[in-house]
Amino acid sequence: MRKKYRPIKPGKKWFKALVAKIVFIVLGRAFQSGARHDPDIKKEVSAWPEGFILIMNVLPLGPRMAMEKTNGRLKYRGAKYDDGDLVVNFKNLECAFLVLTPQIGSAQAFAERRMTVKGDIAYAMAFTRCLNTLLTLLYPKFICKRLLKRVPPMSMKKLMVKVVVNVIGVPFGL
Picture (cartoon, rainbow, N blue to C red):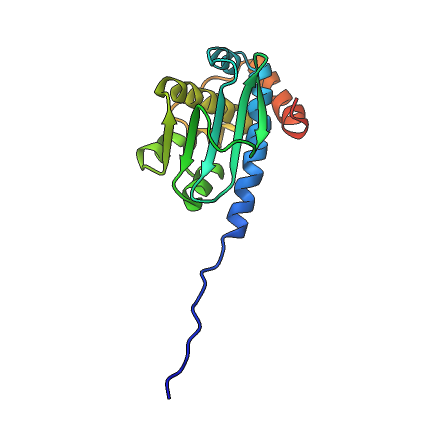
């Protein structure tokens, strides 16, 4: 008599997916606030065309984040859009988890082919510069040293922007 075995279903990575969703919300609100208050991010975003849509996505069916430039400002749109002008895809949830919980930087993730970009390379470079500036506003210096090739100096004005982004921007999206 043959034994019948049930197929084994792989476990879902619900915790990593939840962390990715939360980090996308925080990153989206911080990006929106940084584009309003930080002069470096504001300068980069001003060069983007009106109606520009930026999407960060975890493949195959993971969480996503969308940003849209409307009325000269960058707005966080949640997971509203499927396609945009610039789409940054993480290959899988494991790769996204490493980047979103600051274990590796975006430059290292691109070099290791953990991320792909679909869209104009000039906008992708502008997004990378904005992301690096945003990371200096969100994280302390000892974490930024690991994520960035070179940590920019923090002036008093930048320090005030950092306080505004972390205290008002992230919780309220202002």
